Length: 232
Image 1 (cartoon, rainbow, N blue to C red):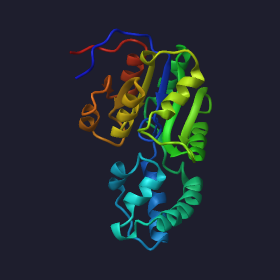
Image 2: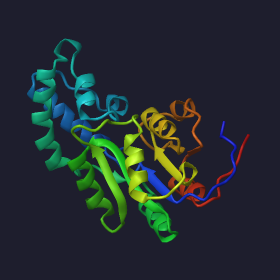
Image 3: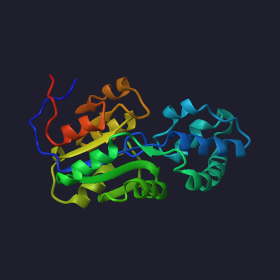
Image 4: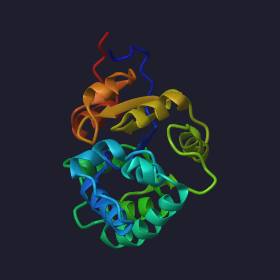
């Protein structure tokens, strides 16, 4: 059920990256399979990565590895194979979802401040945003960084909130495609939008009672700009 609450103009829109702005699953899966094979481990089917990604690369490695190989030593070996490969091939198949560039342009022209909050490692997040959305101005592009908690910890949302300045939680929306994103928005006390075009199911999103669930970037755009249909 959509929550009913007094409408407050949204000023800041924070987006997850993988599965929300960009379809990155093929490049992520190929890079992880390269790292698995390089460590002498069986590779995963590409469709498995829809459930494996979203919690940062170290959790991706742990979950992709066979149970008897899930040691920190092997995780670090995975990282050493994954990062060079992914940095070189991160845009082989990755593309914005249909309607995303138009959504960002419309929001920016309407005065909405844009930001990215991802569990992708910082260098990768910055590089992909620059490549695909370099003509847009983002207040912050934040990814997984050493010494900083990852989502669903809300610190990444609060860091962007502080960078904006004086703003209320009802003036912020966080949009993402997974349960991790729904928890992040809820933990941060901001409006949360689930998007169904990414890696996870609508049922997974609905279980966290987000402010809204959107089936297209156009629907998300309308909600952010104040045209959200209220349903009890």
